[in-house]
Length: 190
Length: 85
Image 1 (cartoon, each protein chain N blue to C red):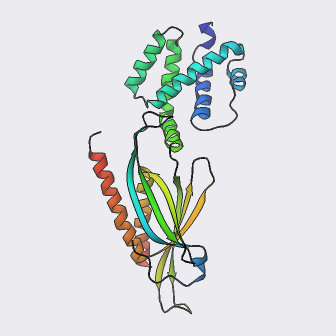
Image 2 (image 1 turned 120 degrees about the horizontal axis):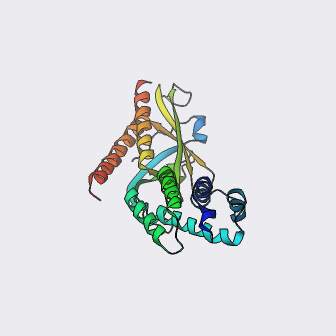
Image 3 (image 1 turned 180 degrees about the vertical axis):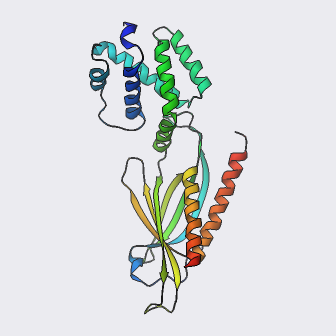
């Protein structure tokens, strides 16, 4: 395989982008042939395939270990020294790519590993109730809260809840307990 | 959390639910098959809600810490507004 065919730069960056879309962000329809024809049209398929596999493997390793920049440099340097590894130009492109996409990839990995519903949205309004025919209540305000919940890759489900002032304050108290737990967790050394 | 003892009798209870119970836990995702180094904390919530007929359902969901903080902040806003209405 002529290393020159696979030098770094725009095609490699484009390839890494596409690999991230496919592997982490669940974007459909990204095929090997599409990538080869769009990014490396002069490279024959039998040469492109192992190259693609190598890049995908490197990206997955970096993401799986959630590498910081020191680990990343050490890892990529080792890859440049390996037989059948990468060039230092390619290492530079991969490094730059990870630094700018790390947060988004990590977020996708987090979403993929959550098997419960996530909270996708919250909207609310407060109604002031006045006296009604059936009830002697006068002017009891009510909060209507709509939670948008959804599992990864599935459509949202909406849950509508009604709270009076007492209940809102009860929940606030519970939420402050949660926040206290979070503070305790964060303040503890890893 | 205690159930509201006087459920509202108006039409909107057709669509809305009463919160009967709110349970929570703070978890830490450590590792998974797709990511060996996940390391993120999350808040898991289990709600018990009753519809207008009194039937109780359980709803579970998770929030990242920033999502939880936004959730908490919204509830504080609701409390501030409901107090003034």
